Image (tube, rainbow, N blue to C red; front, side, top):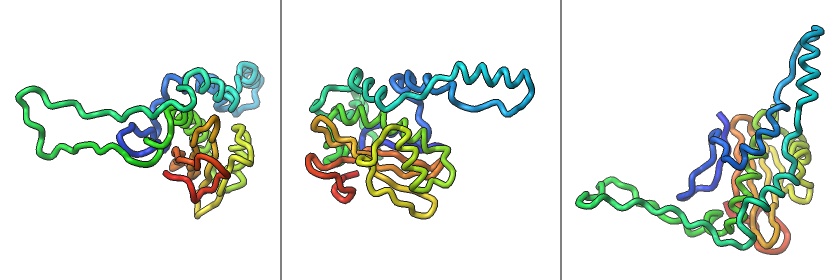
Length: 211
């Protein structure tokens, strides 16, 4: 079971193999041809392999993701999306005694990230988690290599450390006045990538971010 988390609170979480959103699905289609190879050496099967390789299309690049964010996400500085409110009880009905009243968050990504960061963070979370899910023995070197392949430069990668079978890291994704960062934990099927909040200005240090 895959785990691709989002932040806590009233917002729906994206962990444990969520259905891809329509926006991400549009990109995921590009990568379908890159999955799997034909393990055979016969002439007919080699022809099948050649045909598959010829039709293979590359996975979406970071530049393509960023272009899609520009087109589909709110503009920089847009306020956070208001959390959902519970539906009122029908007329004449009394609320259940054991009903849990949701509490709006007062800190963390839900209230500190603007709408653009929240939208962009979802796209980045998805592609990174997908790339790390099948990584065997996720050492810092392997995780860094995958992040590089996804287009994230060294200056955006922070605090890459291994603890047992898990490698944790942070990505500084601040741009255009935003505060988006990601906290990742690469552990095979237990991989987690979650939004966090970076300092508004100055250098990124993992100890200053909020989760």
